[in-house]
Amino acid sequence: MTNIFKGHPGIGDEVTGEALVASDNFSARYDLDRIKGIFSRPQHKLCGQSYDGKILILNAAKGGVATAWMLQEMVSRGVAPKALILNFANPIMAQGAAFANLPMIDRFEVDITENVPNGANVKVIPETGELRIL
Amino acid sequence: MQLNDYEQEMLAGEHGQAKQYGMQQVLRVGTFFDAPDTVEIAQVHLMADPESLGVSGVEFLEGLATTPEADRTVVVPAVTDPRGVDLNAYKKLGQTDGMADLEIRATAAFRSLGFMMTDTCINYQTICPPVLGEHVAFGDTGSTIYANSVQGARTNFEGGPSALAAALTGRAPRYGYHLDQFRRGSCLFDVDFRPKDLSDWGALGAYVGREMASYWEVPVITGIEDTPTSDEMKQFGAALASFGSTPLFHMIGITPEAHDFKAVLDGAIPKSVKIAKNDLDTLIKSYMPSDDKLDVVVFAGPQLSLMEMQTLAEHLRGRKISNDVALIATTSPEIKYACDRMGLTEAIETAGGMVLSGVCFYQMYAREIGEANGWKRLMSNSAKLVNILGGYGYEPMLASMEACVESAIQGRITGDAK
Image (cartoon, rainbow over all chains, first blue to last red):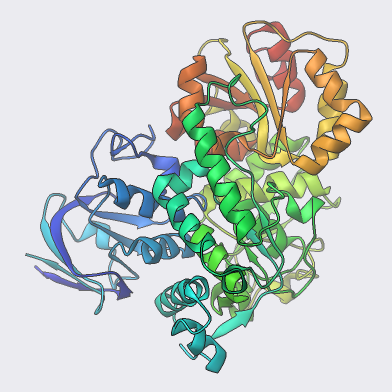
């Protein structure tokens, strides 16, 4: 099994943590209860689950523009994912990650949501765009 | 990413802390998306409601606002998206003094940076519509998709931190929808009917939006024969951008870059996805609850134009909304003044409705005001609003303005909505 996945060089610093994985999309405003630190959108596959301190691995950035501010707000309160890993980010997610200095990588050579097991311990290396299963 | 001498100076902090922040943000995002350089932009539309900003975001703005005036002042016309608190109505809505305080602090900081507090998401209808080919930095999904698609301007989604950077530097990274190659159509939808009212246009946008895999897809719509109105395009685009995170569509024979298929599609015309009226009915019914309980009716997301406010006022004139249901309409300060002058506000408020100015429902602590007022079951004619509010603890449903008003008067979901 491949343990190293290559994406586009990303944003932020190297980080290690537990992966929370789903094939769903992601928006901070649409999908989260940011006070409780859980997914709150009933239709989301991770509804009810905590994202706090996790390496969040999802498909694509969706929804509106609020996420660009909200990532930094989440980081400032200490209730935030450790990193965002997406098949496809959008500008909002990149702008939010850049503003919050939250590690993020996207555009992998494979569907990253199908290649990292939920709960795996992973290392995120934004500078080279690598995700490693440890 | 190539920066010219002046941009290098801004990055080095030679023109102050605010411009240095701006260039850092431009460079980080531009590098992430392989932008070759920057593009000068003509105007900025910035989203920064206090719920999204939080205390840390407001403190960041206040920090910039204390730097020397010559360094911190925006260099292009810069206007704001709806705010989170209407200071004339927040107590009635169950918003707290803490929310109002954050709002006042954020507004003071933006004024100090030189922003014009237009507090509207329909700036493309009411403030300064961009023109074909103009590069701008718009920061609301609805304003972005309208500017790109209907007006032919060029912008990516510029979320708050990047719209602020664009206002301070006059630049955005040149990638995505600033470039010709990203504005080509990627998929085709064939609509064999004309949506009837604004909620149907929103449902059509929602249907197409759900089919979008990512930000980079550009749907091309064909089959619409009669030119839609500005408000119809507004609801269609806002829903498409909300469901699809997509900032551009083309409508053959209608939008300015789409004279014909060849103008927006490369190679052979792709097989189209057919959309029938029945598909929209199914989408709308998917939000239908099993009983007729109703707590609140909201007309917002996007804010209402003068024409929509007139239609709402005519539906409500001389009638009385049930005491068990709240009815809220949000619009821009400019349109609110016009409504006050023309008697539209009075017609809505006499019937028991609330007209809020400079805010939009989902941007005003929707979860907290829902809990404070016991609102769960919500009706709206905005597909965008219905899409967002599920995550905020509401049970939202989509219906025409007429059905929403009738239900508000009856105190239960009724009419066409059932």
